[in-house]
Length: 187
View 1: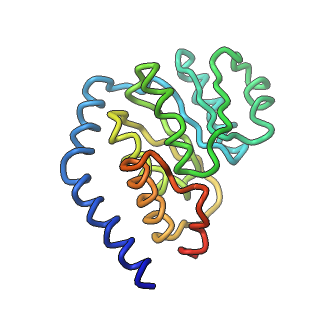
View 2: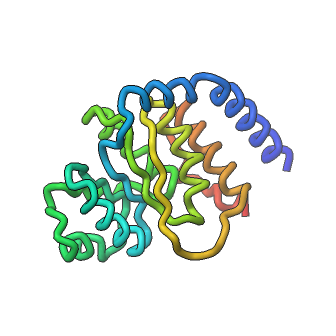
């Protein structure tokens, strides 16, 4: 119990320090340099998200689409919508929401991408935005969230805090802790 309390205190202190200037400044600069999204990032896990993204892709035919750990039917969904394969990147490296972001950072930076649409379910968006603020914000990548209506459930605040903490750990160490058995700490 003491370990968990100290861990949360350290995470909170780091969040205050980073959130008070560095990350907001990086996000502001990125948004000024790139006011419109340059790519669509879909956080996989639901065919509903992929179906919605096909509509978004048809509205913005010049944007590439990055599918981070999509559903098994993702390729078929995009093909059926007439989205050319040349616009799609299927990335299976992510194992959870934190790694949805951390695994794509080097690729986005290499391509000079500073602004992305983030597509995920409405219940999942608060956690995704919190993680994106730390991970993308620290790298000078801003985002525009797009929520897909879906299940009417809510993720716990402790889960959001846990993943913000993991994002801060990644920022400091380059590792997310995805391989640790962190799930047992915060149930």
